Amino acid sequence: MRHARYSLIALALLAGCSPTTPLFIAQVATHEVVDYKTMKNNRMVAAIEDEGDLLTFSAMAIRDAHSEQAEETYLAGYHDSKLSNEVRAIALYQIGLVYMSRYNDQRNDTKALNYFYQVLNEFPQTQAATRAEARIIMLRKRAEEPVQKNSRELLANWKPQQTLDLYKPSLDPDMTLLSRRAVLKDRVGEAEQLYMLAVADPGVPQDIKEKALYQLGLMYLAPDNPQRNRDKGIGYLRRLLVQFPNSDLAGKASRHLNAGLNSQ
Image (cartoon, rainbow, N blue to C red):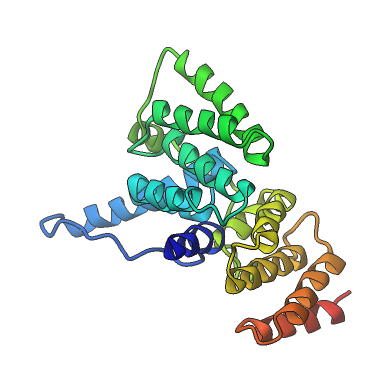
């Protein structure tokens, strides 16, 4: 269970690298492999554009058709009573988002609804409950649509938004996908709430708290952030260095802190 708790927070909130490259059938021609890889990348970006609350780990699960594996990881976090209700509710909420994604080959709206209702029933006072209620309304409206396209049909006509270049060179290379999307979509305040849940939760290990504070500093100092706040960014980096002076991130945090202090 301890390992599961680490997986939930580390992978969901702070994952910065892609999982192992998927294996392809040996007989597939080279150009078909390239097309398949492009489709998988498009799937993740499309899913993120369609649903801004998806955490990095959830988006990767949709991309790689690992919905059940993600469900198992999140459920381990949900069952961990040492975590706060806010974090446990997010675990259930993320499962619902994964299964309701229109770009998920393993989409299951019924399963998604069940998880959203579970959030409402078990954690009615959490932030996730409010968001789950909104997703229930969305799913009900979706069920009334006369035409139900599958994920491949949707991807065939999908074009990326010009405002969501997740690998924009001006974004700090240490930023997670969650942080990058938050900056580019002007949703840093919402990402801040998620990271602060990890910082405040006594059940979350120290190294995850360090990473959360580091991401907060990077987001608020990012030049691409419409709500860039130099003082908040500096504040989060200072907090990291004061609370966790022996952190592996201390060197990077110090460099970003100095750059922030010397910037106009």
